[in-house]
Length: 185
Image (tube, rainbow, N blue to C red; front, side):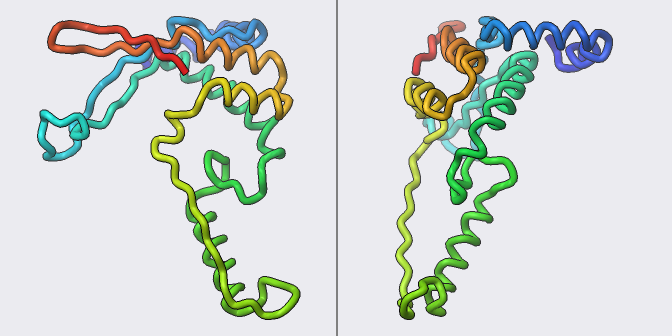
């Protein structure tokens, strides 16, 4: 459904769409059609066209499914955000990499000034960082479900996430014709 048509339909019959999304949430079902992704490869500048790294993959998703994703995300976020560490900045509303950088800089300044510790004036600071390449796309689905269980996310949302993870497909075009790839976690 084109976005403009979906927007017009929602404006015309909001109660119908509300009931549809509420039914999905109540039943814990993410509709199969909304789990189909179309892969589009966007060229990265003037890089050699025969190298895979010359392209940025973009997955086109159904907008109705993206709306449901957003609803589920907001509900899960409301449950888990208060449980996350104060110094966790990634994937959190109202926190950015600049906030994390400022924390590191201020900690280093305090260490240099000797004001970070109550006993003595230890003028040093150690920083350890970890950057996991492609972390978001590499997350193990079973680990995500385990974390949701540990954070006591409501069962209806966990059913929805399980449904979201199952039966996902990626569609893409090749020189020999269209292909379908089943996504597993």
